[in-house]
Length: 278
View (cartoon, rainbow, N blue to C red):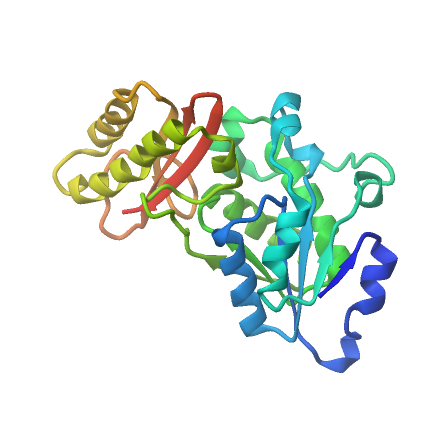
């Protein structure tokens, strides 16, 4: 496993396009956990060369305090990656990725007006900036993203279509802790009590899936909100039941469409997201 910090060094170790070798790419912001590792392992199984980036992207944080407290532990990340069989780790400084400010503005239409886009203005523009830059650097055949960030995945697929990039976006399942809590780098910021109580988020979503045939969509969303908010450690920011393709809210259950429930919940000061497909 080779660790690189500059674009020129990384490119010097990538296979030439004429070699026919397939490149898999897993972009991360570090603080790696088993969810990230599952993406890397799938990439290793499906490609000749695998690149993992570890870069906390400043342009996708609309709250400077959130950027400041985002967990960072490169040494631990590298130990985990060493065991996966990945070939190249790209750990650039901010000025390597952004030698000058990125002023591009993406338009994702209705995809970015709901949920995370509504509550974190500018977030997805920052995501699109960094992912498109990393794709341009790595030139991967496949890139791997987890379904925990359901809306982000839709945004990235849309960006790839808009820019006509020759990369396959591979969606990978949510990996959960034993309690059911969706694995997230932010979990490391939770106290032991917060982490224990945060498990109620996924438990409520699992129960909601059983109730979808018994309750109307608005009633179910209300039930999810009330159930989570009863826990003094938790405070719901949003519960949205949406069409899995358009991400627009649905009022009625239609057997012909796939719907997904997406939630954002504060556990103390830490903001957690999760989702479940009904």
